Image (cartoon, rainbow, N blue to C red; front, top):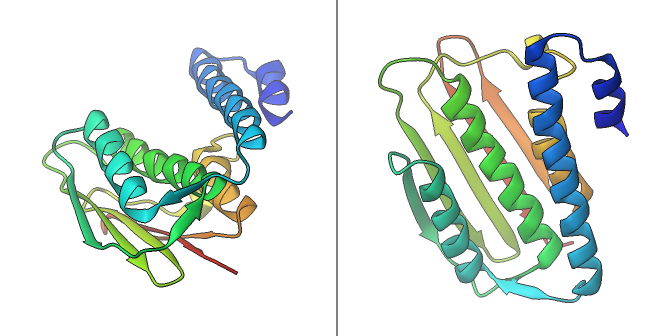
Length: 174
C-alpha cells in the first residue's frame, strides 16, 4: 500500500526510480510470503543459512569481507531466515550505494548463538544520521527494521557523519 501511495505522488525521475525499486521489493515480499505460507514449518540450519547468505553477499560484491565467527546447532524458521537475508542484503546494498567514493572497507560478520543469530554489517564510509534519511526512503525502515520486527528480531543502527555505519541484525528464539 505504501508503495502504491508513493507511486501516485512520484514526480521526479529519481522518485519514480525509487518507487520502481520499492515495487520490486513489494512483489518479491509477496512472493516470499506466499511461499512461506506453504512451508511455514520449514526450518533451516544456521550453517546452511550463513552459507547461502555469504553467497548472496559475494554476488553483490566480491570486495566485502564476510566472516562467520561461530555456528550453532540452532535451526531457524524459514521466515526468520528470509527476513534476516533481506535485511542483511539491504544493509549491504545501502553501503554500496551510499557509503561514498574512494576506498570503503565493508565487512559482514555472522554469529550463531545458542538461541539466535547476530549479523553485523559495517563500513568505514561517510556515515549518516538516521533522522536525516528522507521519509520516502524505505530501505532502512521497511526492508531492514520492519522485516526483522515482523519476525521478532531487531535492527540497531550506529552511524554518524564521518564515522561509517554499523548495522546489527539480531534474532533470538522466544
